[in-house]
Image (cartoon, rainbow, N blue to C red; front, side, top):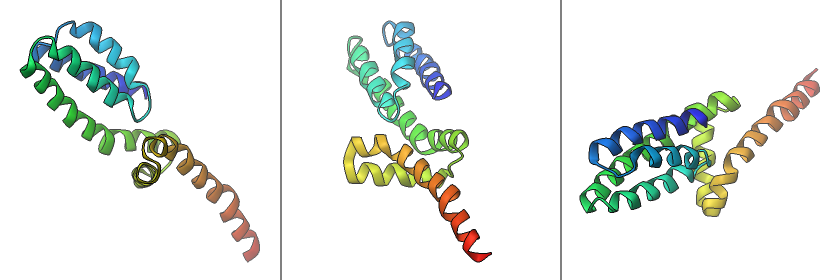
Length: 138
């Protein structure tokens, strides 16, 4: 999560400088800490950055909003599943499916608990179900 938050803040800082968001260094530091919040951090960081961009004008807010819209898609469907899959030893496909199912069934709450539930389910299957099946075969 630290890596993703740093990437979010770093790339966001560069784009904020390019499009002219005021107080870009301070906003980037805040974005880093907000982006540490799983699943909703990027959305909150986007809202914050767009609101600060509005102080420079609507075109600045739209430009930074469009950047973060693209960034959030890349983070959600490419970066986060790969990082979570490596850190938790959960296949990338299960990370995506778990987040989609949790978000669909319970909204934001479901999306927040999807990763722990997916990881716990996989752990139970690996440590309990498979050894029990292997024991029955011998």
